[in-house]
Length: 146
Ligand code: SME
Image (tube, rainbow, N blue to C red; front, side):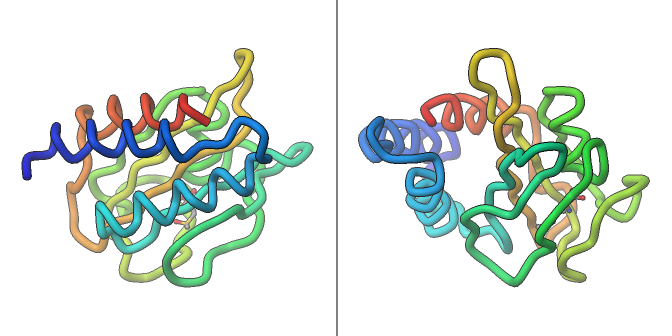
């Protein structure tokens, strides 16, 4: 299956899965499982904005750091800039927070509601240069369903 078809199917599935009467954690838990099993990357998870930090939310993959300060790491940059961060080689990203030594590349997508970032979606790959602008666009569409 090509990438467009995979993401378009994911968009449809997430649209059906997200329950407007459930809280964010419940919906994120299902979205993470769907993305992780479909895309098969090393780590897939959400960090939620809690006061002035990002706190670990639902995820699939190895244990991860619990809290990230504002602006720190790839996740903090996505929060600060409100823009998706595509990192081809995490070893070349100044300030990258290494939760797992096998991560080589990653994408972090801000989840925005009423103009404010309320969470970020972080997907880590154990290969270099895994993600590009096409992944960014589709994942931004998918998280907009939350
Ligand atoms: N690498 C991220 C931290 C989260 S873990 O990868 C799960 C960062 O630099 O923000």
